[in-house]
Length: 240
Ligand code: G3P
Ligand code: MG
Image (tube, rainbow, N blue to C red; front, top):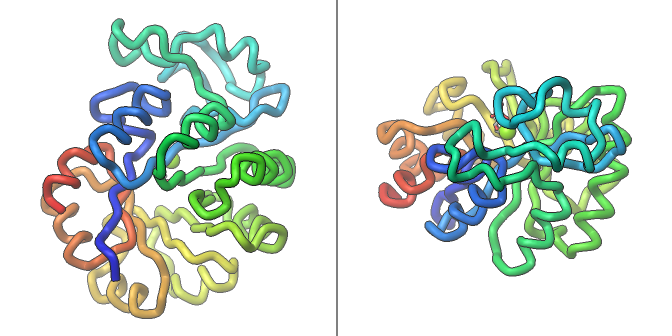
């Protein structure tokens, strides 16, 4: 089995404003294997990269992301909340990330967020973009919306998917299989070591999040998880 991959959570988010191009570029430059980022739809149905449902924490905007058109979202700084020197950062679109990714080989973990009543719209918009940029073998689609993951797999089984979970599930293996997914993106303290080993043995790809402490990074590397999702890809790379 190959070594545990290091995915930069929202880009290199401990040093750069999360979910911005500069955070993704920094992750690439330090040698991360992949980036995880959050995808939502703008008012005019353009997939944009931002974590919260609202703009307030990570941009100069205010209110619900989905209430703004792309043109409006582009007026806000997505970097100045972190530091003045990043004020030129904008909220990226998914397509901008895909364009940029043509010049590198990073794995792209798209975490699809949004309203459950827009889940089919999200799938219908995101898949053609993956196809347009020939990224079928480099993306991993994941979501807390497990129904969306199942629907995705029914429609586009050639794309790898994972479910994101916060709680400890009773039988993660059968649940993941029921959704036709491969990845189990779990909150890092929600599995015992025995359960984790058993899941790896049965072929489930374990990707704990958000693993920022040295002790835990080391544990998951030793376990040979498929990937670790971390805000500190620099630390994880050093430990690996
Ligand atoms: O994809 C793993 C992790 O990002 C899920 O939680 O809230 O950081 O998007 P959150
Ligand atoms: Mg996320």
